[in-house]
Image 1 (cartoon, rainbow, N blue to C red):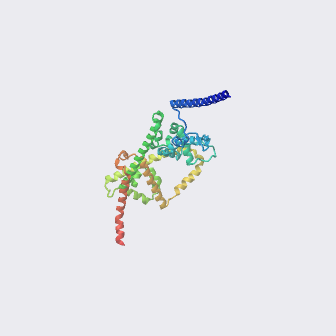
Image 2: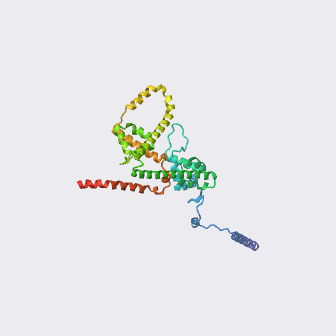
Image 3: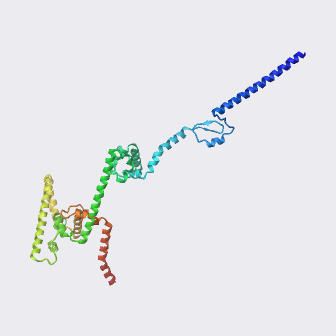
Length: 368
């Protein structure tokens, strides 16, 4: 009996020792794992990760309240791609040079897109959008196609093509054309200012002087409708006041002979140019004769004569502006900087006009 109790007590002790050894082994294992984790730099997750989540940047996967991971939807990804694609568009729209260039071409008569018969015309906004797409796709082809509608201030959007020899050629063409246009405008402004100055002087654009420069045009608009009395008045007006000496009369006769010779030359050239047309209309000769006889019988009224005179003067002014007065030295006008400021010329003419009207106004005021 005593031996049985002794053996039972020993078994219980051994079982307790085994449990202690097992617990000790587990503790040693945990200590070794902790040591190993510390050596490899691993960090055990904390119970709450809310603070670390705030510090971490946003990522493609997010965790909901239940702890499950959510990936971004296809719509969200598509929106991100659209934003990325819109970045160049936003930059393009923000460029004032590009916008001005596109509007200049859109508002021109340049065809920007081939359309079918009966298809409605593009609106201005649609034309601009088509041009923007063409510019983004092939800017060099855009420059080549629409360079005729561009000005030097529109070349900024093509600066990135400056190393291309073709782009250099097209840009130079745009600048040269603009320079030529500016020069023509400057010359025309100079001639317009000179015309006003000559009008004030009164001699160059007098009826007699204009008749001498283009006698055929004068005859067509004025001369053929003058009465005998008006012809005598024209001869008297062509002579200087008090010009009754033989030398002066001979000079006037010589000048009149030159005018008649020039008139004959002009008529011969005009008849030669119209001979072919007259030959083609031989079959209508009777109608033509009736038409000519009708024209010969027509006599303009005084109002119509005044309109014809105004038209003649207007055409002579245009002839001067076009540089067709062969005896006039245009170099003295075209390169003269005194005619650069037309505002000054206009102001001088206006002041002269009011100065001439002042005496009449003063007389009217005195009569009142």
